[in-house]
Length: 193
Image (cartoon, rainbow, N blue to C red; front, side, top):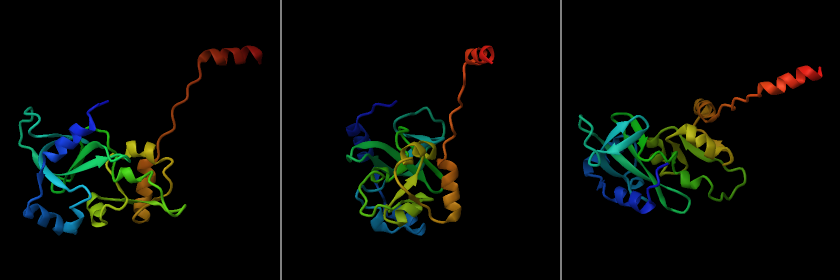
């Protein structure tokens, strides 16, 4: 497990550049209101190298032969507002990844927050753009298999539509563990019979 301190994660996030007017316009074309980018923690940008569901900041490693991709950067915090991971999103490359592999959803700090209505569900957005369009209300899954563990007892989830609900059911359903019985138990059973 990566034991990077929250202050170091926050420092890395703060070293990213603020969005340029051109980047804000690019997100506006995706239907994202500019004021949804401002906070509570602003969206920033950086150049990264994607590697599956993880990424590295281009300036951290020079082992990549190709030039990195420009990405929008998000900070993931826990319920105590401590930085736990950073997410990179490149809409043009259709890539979404975490830096440290700790975060499982944007907005995950809200999952266990008190809700005023007992049966109120957590809105799960199909896309990061949808999450931003909703002004970061609810969550956007980044690592669904990891999210399944945390969402088991989080209460009801609100899908965007029936198809999305079926998709969430599929990706959040964890397989049952394989259960093995030692052969010595079978031999004792045969002797008793």
